[in-house]
Image 1 (cartoon, rainbow, N blue to C red):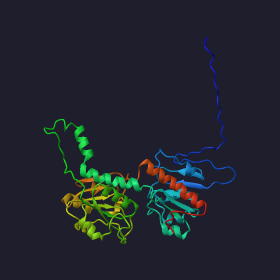
Image 2: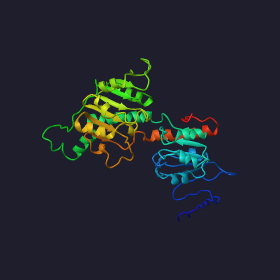
Image 3: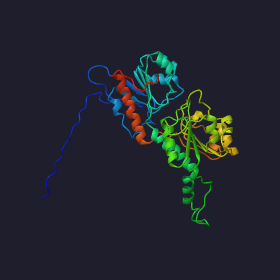
Image 4: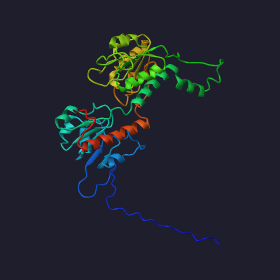
Length: 357
């Protein structure tokens, strides 16, 4: 005779209001005894599409997360900030008019390194710290810059696709190639912007046998960085590959344009996985189509998402990826951890990574 089955019933009893959700947000329950600080993330999806946890921020207050917020709708931005004291943003702009309409905001946290989406002057006037996340993606972004370069030089993806389409099987020879294949050893890499990412790119390029030169706003003493400083004009004239790793400021907007391209080597390669507006896209497209530039690899665009009529989309030998240099899981986890660390530091009275100072 079979043994009788035993059943165990588990009852889960939660207090009313333990979890609340609306159609646009996820909320953490209010804490016991008194008001809880309110936090809002205006555009969290790209940082965390579901493979990370918001727990570090949820522990600090009542958290509302929006996947994305219309960038050009000031009223909606203000509505979503609501009565929150802590505002976290990646690409959603926090302009002076928005801050004027949200006087309760005490802290702005960036889910990124760049902070041009925030009116930092307006925040400073109100005593609001603006804290970014530097350094989280150094290895990932440097790795991706070299990946763009290697794809241009080796065309691995194209030839893999050609083989899977049957072209090698039907080839009369034992091999074929559709693009000129480029060896990097002995060539010169010129890096514009030689901070942590630029230096990481330089180290990888050096390991590939390239000569590395670099430029920045101020010269550095020889031997203090892993490549010598040269003026911008010399860098453009000497480099077989020009890789951009500088921030976007008024003085760097449109840095690569018709005039500066004219000072580059014929047949040079241009890389940009820093900021889209560093290049004038029409001028780069013209240089690609004329053959002045051999190729370009870009992971960023002047406007993002890239417009369907961008001249880069139809330019010759232009490799484009959708702003993913920063996006490996490891880098995004470091970013999110630092966002929480920045906020904890602020709450402890010692704001860190504050670009408004």
